[in-house]
Length: 215
Image (cartoon, rainbow, N blue to C red; front, side, top):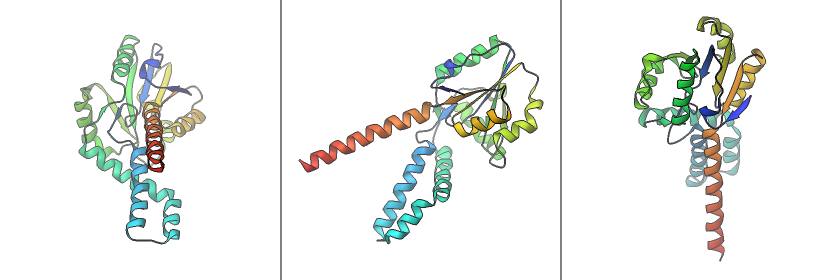
């Protein structure tokens, strides 16, 4: 697995199938899933404080990571519906697609979005000035993992000498690597890196504010 910050960091060989994730890989929104997760935790704290809930309520709520993630996903999915996406790395993406065409290769999108969101995906592509009729999108949904989906459907995607998978979720790539040792995997960390940078900046600002209050 290779960690990348730009699609331009990927080397495309002739006769290669590139499987690219969509959310937080191809495109991003004003808020990422990580941001929505943080917002959900802040909401739990706010509710506990507003309604004077006992500490054990707050502690048990914060321990329920699965429920927090469900709430965060709901918030993130709503955010996807009401906001316009932007390219995660437009210059790098244009460079990669140009290289794919020159090397007689293909790009297919492999997303965890449900098939019912096809209309939304087409709208997002339009907003990013990507011609949706040029690309095939495989919708994995959350029913099975991407590695299991590839076990069932990779052979239907064509015969290629090389296969590349690009995703922002390291655990997904690790699972694919265990099933397909010959597949090249690229971990797109642009959204994660930007999130961590923003968090570090916020923490520094908060520390400075606290120092000012003390002084």
